[in-house]
Image 1 (spheres, rainbow, N blue to C red):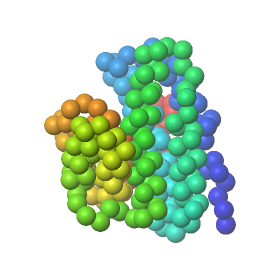
Image 2 (cartoon, helix red, strand yellow):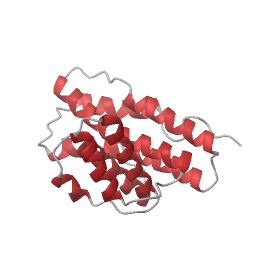
Image 3 (cartoon, rainbow, N blue to C red):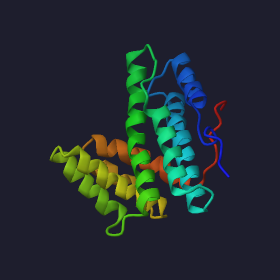
Image 4 (spheres, rainbow, N blue to C red):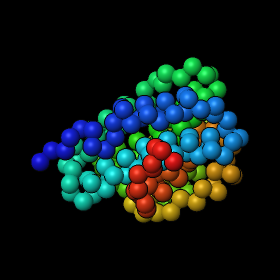
Length: 192
């Protein structure tokens, strides 16, 4: 029994969000703008959480789950067509936050949760790797933290406040969305 490929997320769904963001004057200081960007991020994290949950419950084979995650990643990380440069940069920030969500989900499906260490340990290691400009290692550690979050370990987002702003803090933002999605995978309504 195979599921239709657009069951979890579709290019049309992503484009609807992008169109909404494009149509509004996005101001990151404005609460409704910030919420719109967060909803865009949460909506994607929910799709990923549903794929991982379907895999955990045996509804998807490993290969199917990895393929579904790859499909969502391809949609979400593609270049967006937004004229306003500042708005495009804000959406790019959302995409950056989600990179770690995709890697964490793939790693979880491929090999289960990271065995050693806690979420905080892995994020600390990620921050250290980023400080040494080893971004591949940083992403690897952050993804391992993500596998622990998928497995139910809590992420304390205040850890981001202790870190220098950079990719790891962006990824923590994405992992926070993933954590919310894993605990409550309700669809974010596009018409709020």
